[in-house]
Image (cartoon, rainbow, N blue to C red):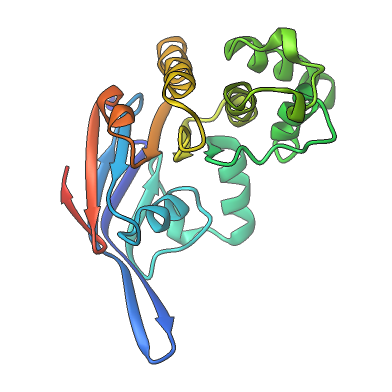
Length: 227
């Protein structure tokens, strides 16, 4: 039996009211992402990339259209159910890392299990395993301010994958890194795909990131112009 796509967007719209003006951030967006895909989303500032990522991450709801996550019509879910689904199925990596400076890399990664049903006794093991997968087990006890930018981003990736999500959403993951360090983070993504059924959707301005992906989609003025 064929699997449902990990993400299926059909005629998706997202509109915002800005005073008397309606901003059409997304318009008639259709997108299918299969399990294990690596898709980059590119477009100029204000094109709708972040809005799309927020909807994919269940942080926002579309104005119209449908979004199925792993076969589930998320538009029918309560906020509580959406929160549980997000905790189980989705990981996030951001440009600015969003690590807590006063706790260790290990403790930052373990935070990724808080909203899951993972037994407390197993969370330590999962956190160390996630750090091992990104090559940072030897830095587990270090505080983020003592780590390089590339190391901090890899800690952020470990936190995102610690709960074994189906989908990893990345917002400009190399944006704060130099070329060589950014390439190292992209190597981590490639290794994660080889070792699991992880699906990646990456918003980026960096053509080097797009070159690593299976497919790039472009958004302009809220419209998906290529797929």
